[in-house]
Length: 563
Ligand code: SPV
Ligand code: MG
Image 1 (cartoon, helix red, strand yellow):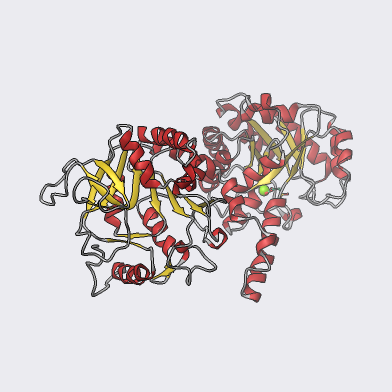
Image 2 (image 1 turned 120 degrees about the horizontal axis):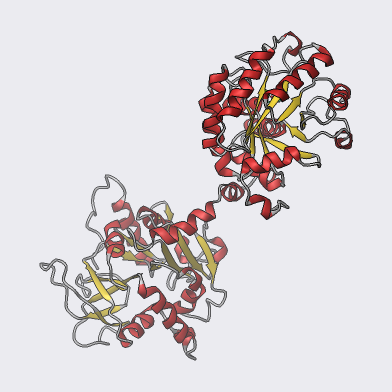
């Protein structure tokens, strides 16, 4: 990310700021005004941050006149310190009051991990030095020395720095007064002197540095004399340069340009490629760390974290509708079939959704999902598609066909199952229904709808209605929950099946039968209707009715779905 010496990072922030002040090299710190800018400063490679009073008040939308309270500033600093591990030097204005306020400020800053504070010899409430600076009254020198002493006496960490800022040049008191005050502040215990100037040339700063002759470190803010070559500061023995307000200024000019463009053109197309992507914002917020933590702390908790949706097919019998899109992108009640499913997962808190596309995968709306593609979809069955999502099978996962609609309780009950493997089986009268799904299921016992919580396990899945012992107990609806130890077992089995020469012809029912053959208990959750698969045109029509019946306050076919 940047060239900061890792050894340096192991020392405290206060120690690092002190080191920067005392080193023989010219050092630089950069303005930041909130957590995001603090992170950006760190990524740019800077070793420290200037928490500018001007910039922090500006990002709050108030003036640099102590309009934001000092506790609001300190709260803001906490975000900055959290977002970046760099030492932060706070622009503490006049110390927000008298010596007593400085004492409390120093203690609070140390508690929040701030490395130092700069206080200026003006009167509270202050005004930015570049606004009528020569008319601003200075603080009484002795009183200001008292503030410095009080601050130094209250710090718990010896390395916490207090920088005394001399305003005499800006206020028009001349070089002698500036030097007299600097000496007094140095004697009072200041760790460095910030000598401020608003001239467009660095002359008075360089003269001050010469006269000062290294009595203690000098800090400068070359906002106005920016054209002076930086090497001049090096040669003058300056310790620290503050680039004081450039991130708030670039933020303002960028926001102005983008807001104006969007307002005037009523479109985003002109700006989209010129601004940070949403993913870049996520990166700056360290969103990935959150996802990783979620895997550790939420697994085994309230439900599965992930879903894999098999969506590679075009849809037999639906060719007329799926020339340019896969079956899962067919619109049902105003939104694609897949979106119903994805919304259903999200409703259960399952946000890590991997969709395996194949036929016309590029037409799949990838918003809020991870899309992976089975390039060989035309030659393979469902298991080859599932294998494409093998990386997603890390924690509790629901595996689903992409062409499913169901009432939300079905998924809720499924993810609440503790079993390593659970399938949802519809026990409604199969023969009487007009569902085309042909995954007939035989279980350890038929659905006894009077017996709540009966323990039932899977024996067999077959597309042949007469393929098992006696009458089938129902149909598998295309939902499988894999949980806990089941995840590793499933991955292992998938690996074994992959080695089989007929792997490309295998579907998820073959996987279920293989689990049963291995002696795994595959739990069965019975439902009685309340779902729809979409396999042909008639299904497609009925799915529309089903989805409409699920919308709020729908009337009519509310019990749709038994098949
Ligand atoms: C600030 O950044 O708020 C400063 C530096 O005090 S300056 O604006 O240059 O006075
Ligand atoms: Mg300031």
